[in-house]
Amino acid sequence: MVKISMRGNCKNIQFTPKNGEPARGMVRVELDHNVSPAFHLFDIQLFVPTEFASLLEIGIPVTITLEQNGG
Image (tube, rainbow, N blue to C red):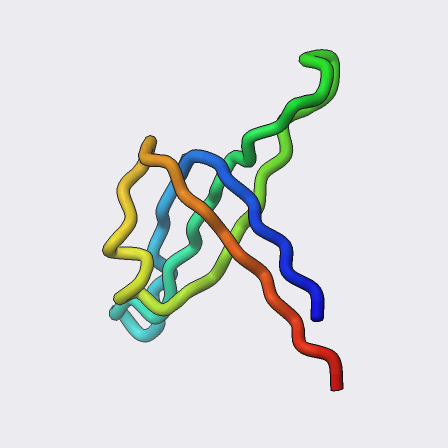
């Protein structure tokens, strides 16, 4: 089993329309990092159902967990 947890701040939320109605939300999170400021900040983009994206707020801390169970 692999489990990766990342923390960051929500930087952007956009809703992608489908036939005039939101079909999914794109959430961009700028990840916290502890590397030299000479490196670019890392970010991650997630496409989630609009119901989830509408619960988030820009500028608020977010924790993302990716988990994979072996077969």
